[in-house]
Image (cartoon, rainbow, N blue to C red):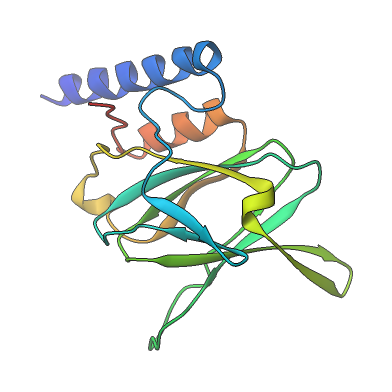
Length: 162
């Protein structure tokens, strides 16, 4: 059984990676769904079920992305990521309507930017998570798309597309 899981993960990675170059920006199965933009924010996870997103900084400057709490919470992790130009990150979420803000930082100056202007986003709507991988967290950050997918698969997240 253990070998079967390794084989499934390897095939998932190979198919997702090999189809990336052929299909354009997003790998096979990663769809433009399950998110939106509102004001300057990226809103993830419309329904609150465990979800998985790939996020690319398509701009020519480094940006930072940070969780912006819109409701009262006792404790919440910062959930911050830096994303260089043309680099990717993967985000897992089990919280409905997560607001992420985008900004640049130069010295002491922070400038909020519209996430819609700098990010490309897609969701794997049929992804499978092991129970140990549930939650709200950055899976992999600031890497080439192929490496983000490889990191994701290595963590036991199965990127199904049907």
